[in-house]
Image (cartoon, rainbow, N blue to C red):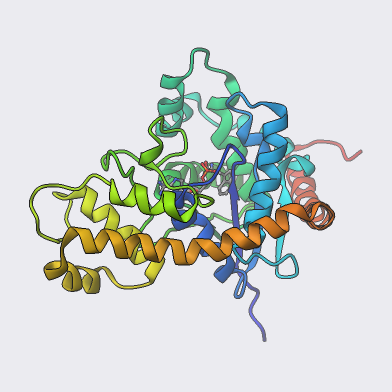
Length: 331
Ligand code: AMP
Ligand code: TRP
């Protein structure tokens, strides 16, 4: 008897260019997973509008993420690739889940607190963001969710909501698990290694974009903040160096131990140079493929239309079950 494949679900917001933090923490794992699991990868445009977006930019960024998915090896014959707003069931399930979500729990989400601190006006969508994310995942009965460390709290909320619904009605949702890489689940800023690498950093030397030119990549890594200890170890006491080692390990597939051993005698300069080389070697071919896919509007459209159709079919199956259990009359 063949065992049913596990279901993998993840999404990325089209809220600007992606950093190597997004790449290492999430995107780089997606293609490998499609070989062994039933995968769905979404461009979560409805999440992106929880902060103000310019319409033309949102359109561009959505197609950018889609093209980047393909450039990183996602294959529409192996995985369902689609755009969140094309599947109305996400918002429908999101509403249902909102009715069993406590305000206290949402108020405790650290990503919400961080973003709220930075906004002049706080809108309800920002607070409810994690509930929509839970709906994304639960609609497809996903077993595994590959995301960076910053999403752990959201996955825990998703499990809580699934359990609450299952308990109140009857077993309906699978409780998903987070899948995170051991090294690189939290890539830090190159300029301030105590804060997360993020595209919203006002200092552009703090982050590397997946689409940065090789020269920019080399320059930013060269300028990365380290320390004056002059010894290569992998420790929280040397956060800048630790972050560089994480980046090097992720892009070269070398182990952290091997890197520390090799660069003990070679020093920081060589470590930076080789890290930059490893990053460029991985990103250059991705950038080339990205340009090709991005120009092929017809192909992108075909992929998101077919992906949307498959996703709607699956999402509808779950949503109908949910509505029935709640006591809604079938239309
Ligand atoms: P977002 O751009 O916020 O939609 O994030 C997409 C994915 O990248 C999520 O799985 C995040 O957890 C992951 N991610 C974002 N920033 C980082 C980072 N600095 N290090 C590791 N993973 C990250
Ligand atoms: N919240 C995620 C982030 O900021 C993006 C996201 C939305 C997501 N829905 C998802 C990730 C479902 C995994 C599964 O990175």
